[in-house]
Image 1 (tube, rainbow, N blue to C red):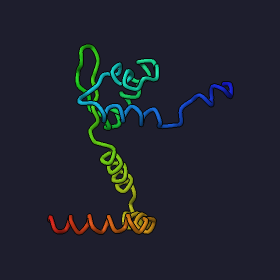
Image 2: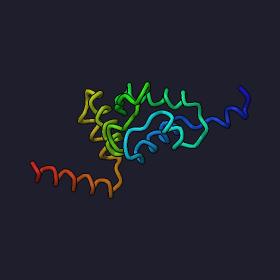
Image 3: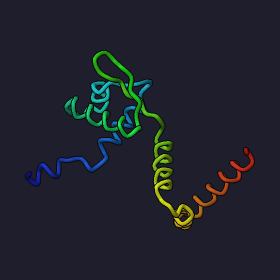
Length: 126
């Protein structure tokens, strides 16, 4: 692979992020071709279809039949997906208390205040 080809490649995850952004901006589920059109990058439809299929397999997207193919929609917005990733990481660690302690100790003062406020709201609502 030449250096020019390497430089032309998108950073890891950027295309996935662009696909998700296109789906979040849509009024409803989109087919691979519709996502490709929304991206305007001139990608092969199969490239977009592969990304959509992988996101569906991971549980990030739901799909419905659309003609001979599928239309895809996100299961959550960006903050919801980030929260899901955080939850899965926490679930995979046997020392949850240690993970939470290290996470909280790495927060900025502002984020600590927000977290405290959210915890108070959660307690009041319970």
